[in-house]
Length: 425
Ligand code: URA
Image (cartoon, rainbow, N blue to C red; front, side, top):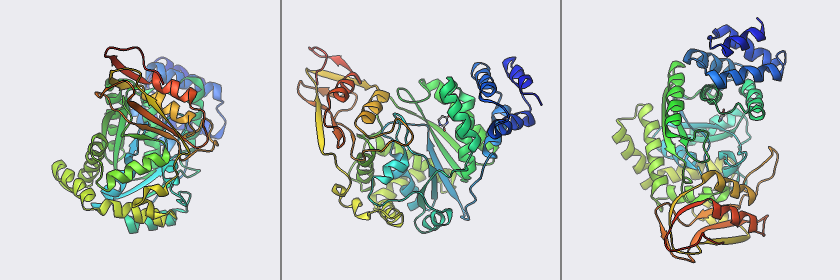
C-alpha cells in the first residue's frame, strides 16, 4: 500500500477499505508513516469526513493498537463525558449505579487545559491511589462495584500519537476523528454498557447542539456495532456542572449530593445518567431506574459505597462525613457585582481557564496541581443580583494575587444590565 494513494482517496472522498485504514494506523503508530503524511490525511478527513464504515474501521484499528482490558466480572458499565468544566458526575453516578447492582469500572485520564480529570479530583482525597495493578482494581470492583484506575500506558497507543498530532495540526475538530478517538478507548476498556455524555456549548468540543447530536448518534452507532449496549445523550455546557469547579471543591460537592444534602441541576443530571446505565444493564424501565437511582442516594447506600471505595483506594474515608478533611484554599477572593444585574449565562471555557490560573489544572502534562484551588459559583443563570452581591468566590493556596483571575472571571459573566455599568471586581 502507498500512503499517498490513501491521502488522495480521502482527499477525493473515495472511501478507504478496512485493511487500508488498519495499515495506515499501524504504519503511523510504528513510525513508518511520518507525521507530515498522517497530518495530510487527517486534514483530508477534517474537510471531507469519513463514512460510518470507515469510522468503525478507524476505531477498531486504534483499539487494536494496544492492550484491551479483560475484567473477570459479570456485567460492567462505563460512563464517559466529552470534556467539561466542573463535571464531577462520575463521582456520583459510579457509586449510585453500584448501589443498584451495576459495576462501574472506570479507566480515566488526568485533566489538561481547561477541563478537569476524574483522577485528579479523586487524588485530592489524601492517600487516594489510582495507579494500581489491574488485579487490585478488579478486587475493589468486586467488593464495592465502583473503582477508577489511571489510564494504562499501552491502551490505544495509536490514539495517543494521533491525538497529539491532531492537537498540533488543527485537526481536533472533526466528528469522525473525535468519535474514533473516544470510542477506541472505551472499547479497549471493554465495558458491557456504555453511557456517553456529549457536551455542547462554551468549553465543549461541540459548540452547537446539532453537532453534539451528530457526534452522539455516531458514537452510539459505533458502540452498538461493536456489540456494546450503548446510549449517548447530549448536555448543555453553557454553565458549569454544579456549583464548584476545582478538584477538592468538586469532591466536596459530590459528597453533598451523595449524602442527599443538595439537589438541583447536577443531581437531576446524575439521576438521569445513572438511570441510563441501569436501563442498559437490564434493571428495569427508565422510570423504574430513575426511582432506583434516587433511592440509592436517599438511602445512603451510594455514599457508603463511595466511602468504602475511598478506603480501598488508600484514601481517608472520613471525608464523607467531614469535608473539612479535604484540602481547603489558604486564600479566597469574592468577585462582586458592581451594580444590579440579571445573569444570562457564563463563558464556561473561560471559567475553566480562571480555575487553571488559580492552580486547579495543568497547562503542561507534568504540571503540579493545587488541589484546593478553584471557583465556587455563588450565582446561576437567571439570578438577579444587587450591586455588591457575590457572583463567585475564587480559591487558591498557590496564588494570593487574584487580579488577573478576577478580571477574567468578570469577563466570563454574561448578564443583562439592570440600571448599571459593567461589573467591577
Ligand atoms: N477526547 C478524546 O479522547 N479524543 C478526542 O478526539 C476528543 C476528546
